[in-house]
Length: 141
Image 1 (cartoon, rainbow, N blue to C red):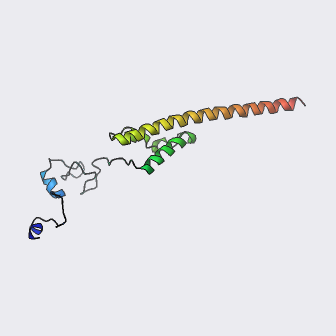
Image 2: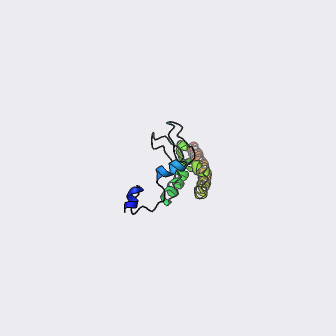
Image 3: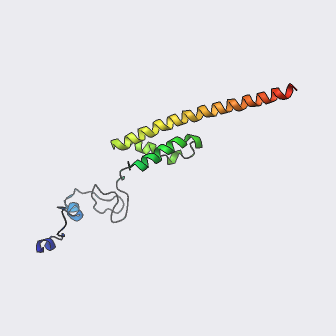
């Protein structure tokens, strides 16, 4: 117990290094904003909160469902929210699972876009034909 107190570790601490010890052993990496030493694995600077690295993308089932649903409805809302579509970010990811999610989202988006264009064409043709039939019926009286 006395050794743990002298080493500033708890008896249940199983890690061999604390973040401060890792920081002292790490190469000279500093925050670009406040110039405090940071570890390369940190996402934010603990001193100023500056973003250091991008956090890994979520690949949970709920996230996938959301991305795929968004990919389906995006063409139907005329791509108004295309800047909010996360498929591109996932597609560009270096994480293989996130990249696969991005690829599936692109396929769904393309199929949904083609389906939307086809449905718009068919409905437009039906509306035109209905109008022509109505006009012909009016003149044949």
